Image 1 (cartoon, rainbow, N blue to C red):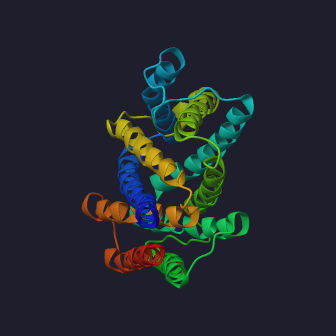
Image 2: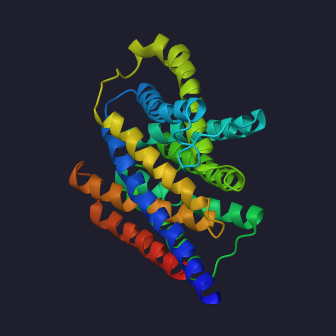
Length: 312
């Protein structure tokens, strides 16, 4: 019996780690499609369509769960929940939407090889919060990984200066950093929610609430001023934004549902999506100063390896 329990423990530990890495890859694909969709395009309509398409994809799960027994007892069932639960998920939607608004404007105006590594430092804040709130503790290997990721951020700021991006005076850098702060807050809140809620409740309703909020922003803030700002152009990549994000988020929430999962580690692994975005920035967007940034990326990747070794 003890051997079985030991094997089960190893399986669950490996499972949430592998899920986190899978989510990171999908998140990288999401960022690449987001960059394509936002280049020379209006931010608010793209973000609105992202939330709308995501909600439409999830709508059948709500209808099938509420009006038929088809999904009963499956991992895709959307259970009926109380007003208090809806309020808790609505708060998550507010936090995530704030992060997305900052992040979308940042990724539109900055190279992927800059925004990617900056976002990769988000787990640093998540780590501090996880230690203070959830009592998570890191071992030596995990600390080495965190410090390497932090070092990459400071080196990246120097690389950005060669492209005329002064971190202290560039508002799009500020927007990206604000996206990191609110994203970190969202990660900590996710760990809290997943202690008592199921994956579908969180994912379905926070997407729906975001869509409702973006509808208000689109109609009352962007639409009346649309002729004075960047025009909106349809890209098929907008659909892929939603598809990759939904898949990445579902896997992420599922990883957090494991009792052994650590939000500080999952958050750090998710930021390894910078490997995908950096590669796309080099191959498809022909961004500058790649050798210098490649070393920063190497530090991020090395940090991910130390975190993985420390969690095995």
